[in-house]
Image (cartoon, rainbow, N blue to C red; front, top):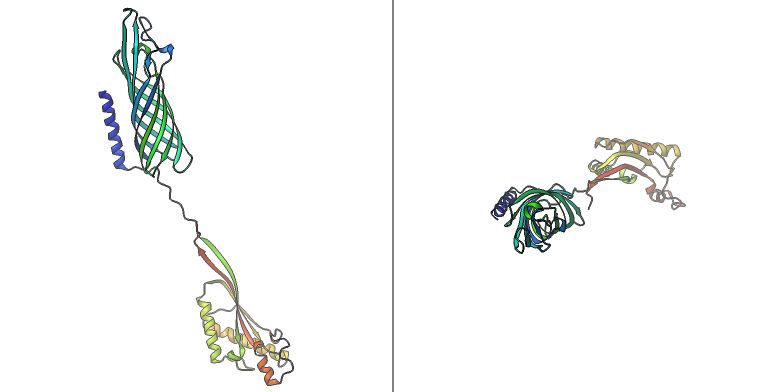
Length: 353
């Protein structure tokens, strides 16, 4: 049992070191439970020459252990553990050299395991796993010499995380042939059923979630700013009034301060129906050119301009039959200059998860 205490101390020291190191992926824990020893009658031989063992074995035992492991990812890990597999009682030994004499004794085993652990997560908190590896054991008996060796180990379990760090597990492990018949009389397998409690040093930390990439949204615009010619120009003239300059100052400020990209600006002049077509065509072009020149002094580049004379009235027939003075007043909205601003507004927006 001194070896068992030494093993406990070694693993405890390793666990303490890992805890202070805080390395991502490490975990430690302890387990305890029940061991069912199994030994077939073919192997229940104390000595093939002089002795034999009956099938009367005490196969129930207490088992406990400590484990230290590292998870490389959500599916693969490596685990190191110390296991005390408990005691198996051997009763009613018949010695051929001493007929009628029955002997009894105990066999107990402990050792270290190294196993790969293969996980299958069902949810964020719950997973199943399988183990496969080797078990370096030391089997002692008060009937014979101790025996050391290495045997295969297989296991499976379920694990549940109560928090990001604390977890519990239930586990079954199978250790194959832990003694030699010529030394300890039996060649048993160990079948352990344990409940464990552990602490993870970061292996449960969630990977940072990448924020969705911002999206670029483009909106096409086609805005028409209409200048009332009766405010911008005197009747029949194409020189800007002071009020007209104020209007154009406001338009140029809006254009220069806007976030419109790929701008295209077109200026179009219109007149009313009074006068000849040639006269009105020329007047509409002159007024459009005056607006273009003034916007240029404010840093606004106009792509094109044109005059459409009296070809596109807005009043229709509503001013018919009026005297000239009243007609001039009625046709005011036909006399206009339009500043057409085309382009697109590009915005980058954050995408909500």
